[in-house]
Length: 156
Image (cartoon, rainbow, N blue to C red; front, side, top):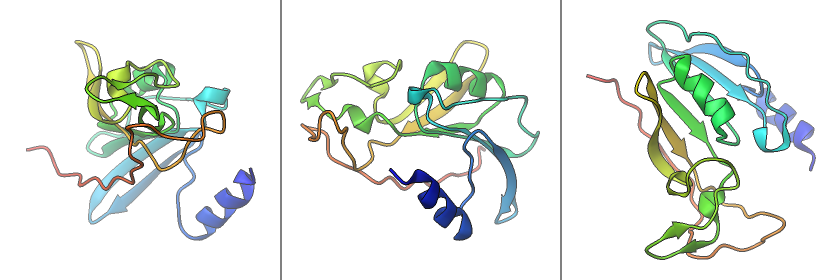
């Protein structure tokens, strides 16, 4: 796929490229420290962490929600981690859910909002089921495509 061309077009339109990078920005007077990785499923991730900026919304943006990425993001202080890749399980059984996640997350976290971490620290994780399918399995069963809209509010 021409991902380089797509990336160039998105960046020229004002999107942030967070593939193995971090950026700081301000939106409506809210400081955001965003950090991301490329696709861990095909070993393109290169997470170079460290504590997020104090007082900023600490945002992780990752393609594949593998624990080798989510765990350090949590321990670095991420408030919210956004991911995709799982296609929501893509093939689900009503009343049971996703059969697989295509990563090392539990099946119950194949889509939607959940928590990752341990007793010391935790972060919110949102995995979007997205709209696509795998080239190996070009269909969905009991897993509607989705584009999610999240409203982020201040803790209080």
